[in-house]
Length: 225
Image (tube, one colour):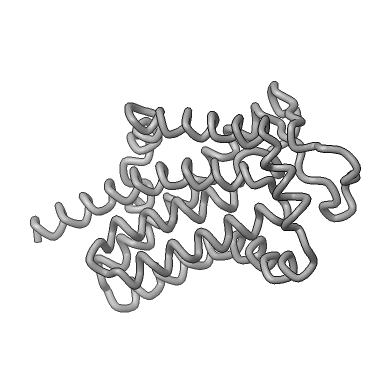
């Protein structure tokens, strides 16, 4: 699938280059503010109520399945219709999801952040665990931690779609709503709020790079045809 791997190494480089690197630093700084100010613990203590958690928990499942199902479904649709634009979209979404996951897991490898207590019976809410990080290499695995992979991937895909379809406001609006639902959902269930905030920033960087890359790919192919 050459389309899926379009400029993937260059895109990884661009994600961590120039102004984009400043966005990563901004995500780190914002996390520091949320952690040290107690805002993460405040959100956990005041907004994790049963009704709200019940409404938002499907975001955990949706954020895990859609990054796999959406690119595949769109690819099949594009292949059936032999539509170059739809195929390009499927490749862009697939790469955005993959790079979003890899970038978030890269950070998780070294931050080792402890997840909120009472996740599937883990830990106790008797003390503020929001400030606990285990910096190093794989001190906390890559499943939990900072930033939220669900959020990073969701915003990466949403931003890629927004860039690929700048004139279609409905697509961009729906993509952003989806990303926020996933991000806020995991921030009140399996992550801290700052995990969501950082994931939204980093995911937007990933999606912006991938979206611009695949928009250029499509426009170049369109001119050549």
